[in-house]
Image (cartoon, rainbow over all chains, first blue to last red; front, side):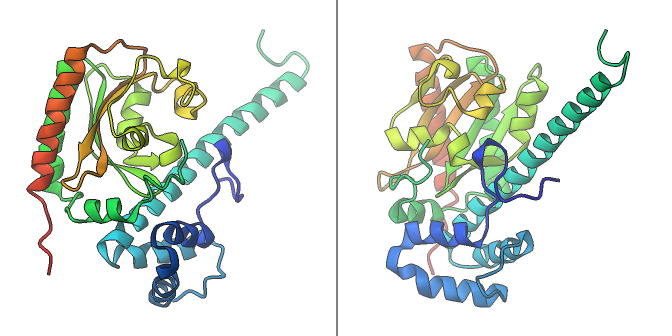
Length: 111
Length: 176
């Protein structure tokens, strides 16, 4: 699995910073209290960068008010898409490496 | 697709969406039946009902007909995608049907990786309008090949969209 913050098709791995930015775009100045509440519910500091932290934040969002829950669904969809795209990206890279290795062997490669 | 559009990440619109139990299994079954009918009526491999959330598009129901390609089946199974990869946000932005005979020729969507990969080439979507006027998302049909849609197709899809909204209204959440 690709373990990078910037994945294929210029999609970044969703993280806490993206989550906070998305909420701010929606709630504006009202975001800070909501963000503090969500971090407390998820037992996060807000400085975590790992995928597990995002999963905990998403769980807290899904249990929050209905609009925040929809935002949580958005983030979950984005995170799942990133994982799928990364898997496809890895598969393509693997096949490219196999083809390169095959071409490097004398007599190898497509005839 | 601008995933940061204020028209999409709009608090009033999101409150409108949140007034309904959009992910209730019973609603999903009703929407699935409408999708099957739309796919058959328009002769398209995929039909879907999609809610456009703040940064991603969620599939509330979708069907892939017999004869749909593996890629088309895959798209139905994913459950949604980021708004910048989806076509239904265009319907929310326009507040009107978005009809594309060949997305590869569409300046706004030709570079979309789903289009470039050849998974989706044709799309027709009609707005699902909330009582307050905001657009919830789209009822749409899609296919992996270019396809010309007629005015009758769009009229049928619009009528099916009205059925979708009637079903969704039955799942309005009771405010405490």
